[in-house]
Length: 291
Image 1 (cartoon, helix red, strand yellow):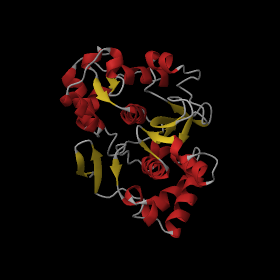
Image 2: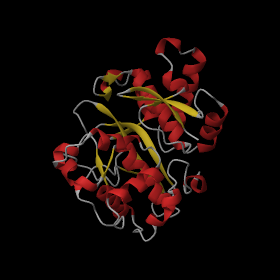
Image 3: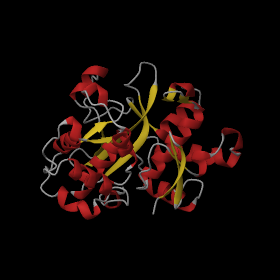
Image 4: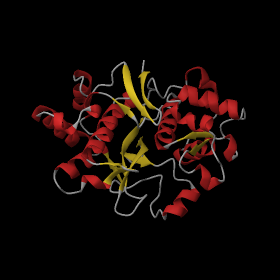
């Protein structure tokens, strides 16, 4: 199991120059989840809290690196991170940002953690919506536990969440590889997977490969593209599909054979996040340096 690997920061989750802000944080997962919720508001939920976002504030979802996010958090409100901010002074983020920030806080304390990309079955009836959660290793329970750090009290009530967001069932959040296999086998309709008007097997493939990258500690933004993420369905070869099917089997759950996943990712440029990625935003395509 990759415990030592996942208990250290990635280039994305490292607090860097802002590391001092993470000292003195609580040591339990529920309390760290509360810290994340006290610091961040989801861009799509902001108006539910009475917050109308300017274009400048909406652009905070592009900050990408936890170090930059922490710097912006401190700029908005210099108090310790344990003090929940009023909504107008919270960082604007999304599900990926809630998940990577929690992973960063856990890794800072030596807890193995990773962000997972996939689909939530609890946002729209009959739909699997593009989403991210955080997964951590519980030494006490000897298992990986999924946490949806985005789901605060308002969201749980609005969505009618019946499960504990600190232990998300694996049939409520479908990781990318499992979604790929469900759609490829005909068990599920790929058009039920996506967000807004974006759906289908190409979208499932994107989340699946982003999940593989995140397992390898490259936590991209949800709209980043490269390699097999950017490939068109009609351009996929038999070898491409065989690789994806193999990788999906390996990553459909809690990834017991991580060494093989790591070797496949590192050795194959179709999967591996390159030095630059295509970031597909509302303003068009931007080339982003990942290093």
